[in-house]
Image (cartoon, rainbow, N blue to C red; front, side, top):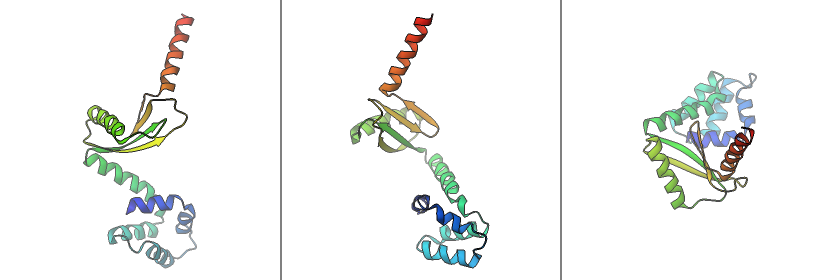
Length: 153
């Protein structure tokens, strides 16, 4: 539920502005949060109310990010974004995913494939803070650099 809330609020910065407005009474903030998010789990609702009381409602995305990171670490999994020139098939994604599972020691990857029309071929994978770049563009740039080094020597 927190994931859905953070994603929906990311498109609505004015809600954060409203929640951090010092002129808005605490009781009004509570009413707004309960009306908008009343269907969420009680623990999540209470957390949101507490953040609002402390003037920290805008910290919700950071809390979500930290929670997901800890959850992934505990379950030996991570999210990977794979950029490719075209949408990869399920089989291609599984092959790439298995390669990264073997390399990282993780047990599970949550794969998101995004099409990047600037790529000629190959792919770029983003896992945590690491970038794996097998794109043809990068290979051509590397080759170009090697030729420059050889011609300057």
